[in-house]
Image (cartoon, rainbow, N blue to C red):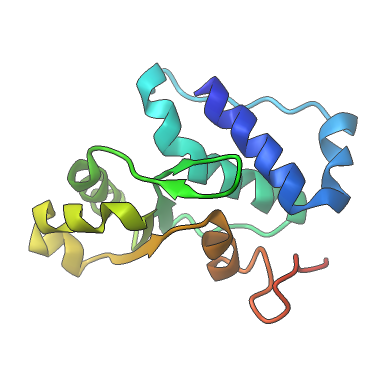
Length: 147
């Protein structure tokens, strides 16, 4: 989990270089509840990156959106394990839209039809795709939205 948080911080600094100094000027503490285990960390990469991007740009993300995927320092969204269970949990929690790694699309065949019917599932290859969809990065100009 610690490594995923460090990768997310580095990636956000590179995506938003004009905001990188915020990480030097302010303390940042990322708390993960006791329910998480160390091996869960990589799957949280896309979520941590999105949360930090949302925070520094003051662009809230709806609680009806979820995501899973390991993120590389280059911004690639890499595959994860346990997709059917994660989508079922998201649907039970009231989530309506889920970003998943594009490389996990084949795993959708193992997801119950009633779960898939209640979710908008968006496969992505790059973290920027998530940030554009969530309007943290402007789709038209491909730059960060100014506040």
